[in-house]
Length: 349
Ligand code: 8ID
Ligand code: ZN
Ligand code: ZN
Image (cartoon, rainbow, N blue to C red; front, side, top):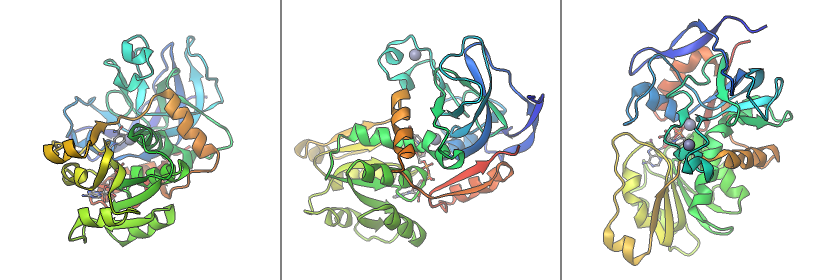
């Protein structure tokens, strides 16, 4: 039976910390499912949501989280394509209108009426979470629910970003913020897609992790005295990276990437540092024919594909598991940049 109340982490005031407390179990609407959460990843976006540092209004008394994996326990009368007992993932895109031009052309993250898990609607840091049936990810039963959780935001996002970069097998991608949650998965997807990886991040723990994940070079932004030269030197012919994936939560690399991107290269902005601007010298951008673009999560099919890469055993990134109760401690480590890979929260029974 589904209980009336449940444990949740609730952000009651801007800046947090989240409060671990009992709240009502939500009831699914006609086009929704109720998912009993087993595991949820903690994304840096959850920290942005708690701090309210983006120019996008966040729900009051927010249950954060948008990388949740669990089991469908109830569904509305119009919920199609997913059944009670199915394993399901709740993603950042909780729902969209399905009727606008973006939804019709498989760009549903760009829907002007998109609902965002753990931001505009309650997310996965609770025992029972709601998702629109059309948008929840159906998960193969043989994949473990802890390891798949980070795929549901970080994995999908970096997979999409790599596709958006246009990089082809054999080409080099520089991954900025490679030691973080998105970055660790980006290295694995890049490798699986036949790309060569230069990892950029800080510290020895992240260096060791990146080398394990398959990076051909690691450039430490905290130690390098000439980051641009070091990144270029790490490419096979010294001419720079074909693609740059910007995943860091700081502005500097968003101002610098053009300098180590190769001519004809593509820079994909994905990280969302608050109040930051992209800046590029016009001269170099023009004469090197650089493309600069943003990439925002992925559509439903990107989700299917990213999960499929994982299910085929191609993606192995490290994660640490702690109980839901310990979310404030995870946020603290994240704020300090001390997490190599991802944290996954275990939801109590
Ligand atoms: O759809 C999207 N565009 C999307 C989806 C999911 C997440 C965007 N995001 C955003 C998050 O909101 C966040 O702003 O991507 C960013 C990264 O999320 P994350 O991977 O969950 O964060 P993390 O685990 O804290 O990793 C960030 C890494 O960046 C490194 C840190 O050391 C850390 O490992 N880093 C920083 I901060 N400054 C750096 C620098 N100058 C840097 N690495 C290299 N150079
Ligand atoms: Zn996320
Ligand atoms: Zn729409």
